Image (cartoon, rainbow, N blue to C red; front, side, top):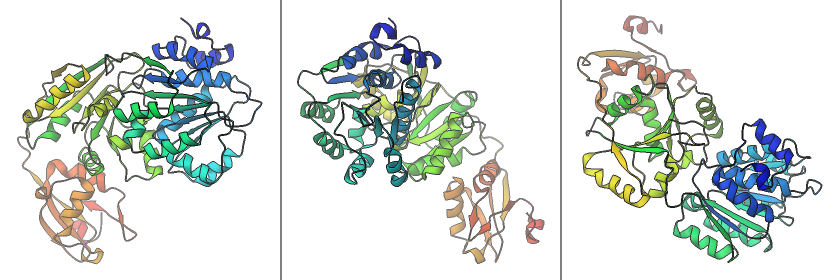
Length: 464
């Protein structure tokens, strides 16, 4: 079956072919004809990476009236990254259409800039719920000409606490619009959303619904010993230096710390967490997408909506609290027909959690044997000197706290701390030398650049 068989016109097919898309996926085969008929609401249960964005994007583009410079389609998404991705697909696939414009609006960006862009002819708006309500409150856009409303990754939006915003938006829309809900899982709050707002005769599409997780994903668990988790991680990564993946931590503090602990390691890593501003977040994502970073260390919230092609593996450094989280995390690998690996780090006493995932998601795990490198001969220490001391408010007590926070060491690794007026020094195991130098490179305090050296004599003369 071709896109032409589904009813997609030649102009859109030309754009698809230019993006090397020629064969529709299962969800596209089922969803596109229903949406083109524009007569019933739609519920589609499908994993990320199945082509669901194009499943609603293509038929919406085909039915947009480009001569009417009004918002005719609204797509709600949980995160700015997903919003940017969806808006980009509207842009790519409308290349050969007559002036059809899509705009993404989301929090974390200046709202005044978005208001100015919406004053131009806009046919499709892709929005996060909170920012859309802000714009509606300011009368910056109108939904009076809306024909389509799409809830993309509805389960994620509900999980992130957007229920009240979604209720408010849906209640403000006209009753005769076509509503579409796309979700990877079907928790109770999503079922209630369907009952409350979709027409009773909605069409439901399920792509491999009985296989909650993509069948091209290999599920593994790695048993680590207490106190050696990082060593097991490094052993796992050492065998995959030419691969890329995402590692999930439970908290932003853990993500930040782990990325620092991997500084100087053979696999380049960086962290994505809620404390990053938008500029820093964009910098991390650019590095990851352009292969300058092999491993993205992230929290579930920070990673939502991220779309990076051809990931080889997913690491659950902390097990997810819900099986739905496992589905969303793992779904970031094995996309577009490719295979991937999803690895859970567990202690022996937590193996029952693996069994729970197997039962709830109808999947099978296999054990992954990894042997950490021996740490023998690593008792040597080095003395590191830095060009700050009492004058910069450092003390014998807070220097270890500073190194722990900024370089990712453990408090017990920092010994023999000496603080002078404009110089301090301390001993650490030699294996942490590079980690400290990399993490503290470019650090500033009181408008002064922090400098480090191993040369005690030069440090006395302030030569670093």
